[in-house]
Length: 199
Image 1 (cartoon, one colour):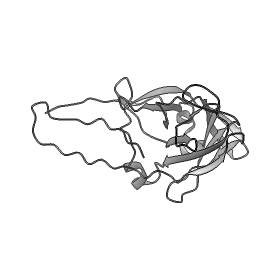
Image 2 (tube, rainbow, N blue to C red):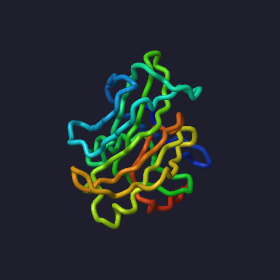
Image 3 (cartoon, rainbow, N blue to C red):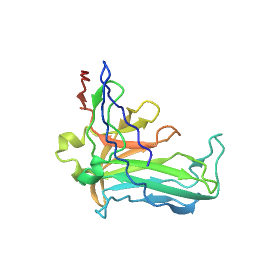
């Protein structure tokens, strides 16, 4: 799985060691672009609390042309309930304004055609069980964030709505993905300020 980290080094030089864990990418599944996608990614056999739904015919080539055909998908979920999974998170969770987020669920969406060319995806809905967040006041603060792999920073993609469903209360958001931001994270808007101290 692609991993983006911001590494710190001593200002005056000297030896420094970085141990970077790289999570294993989820296995590939195949389907037809005209089908409605309904994915429930899991981590290490735990029950899924996340649903990714994609409307039919929502796949596009880099040129912006609609893609019709078979799609290869891989959705890798970093589960904060699983310590080994969370420690291998492919990012430092730093936002563009210098704060550090937590994670109530992080996932990478990777969709490709049969020539292994990446596809942009639109009309995506993300649902997560609200019970995974905890108290109601925090549930009402949840937002969806996306990673820019070029600079390793996270950007706010908008709020998640708290709604009732057949499964109980869920947090839901709609998002249109672009090529450079395929890793998504769920957290509130209360990330703490990060101070970088150099030796």
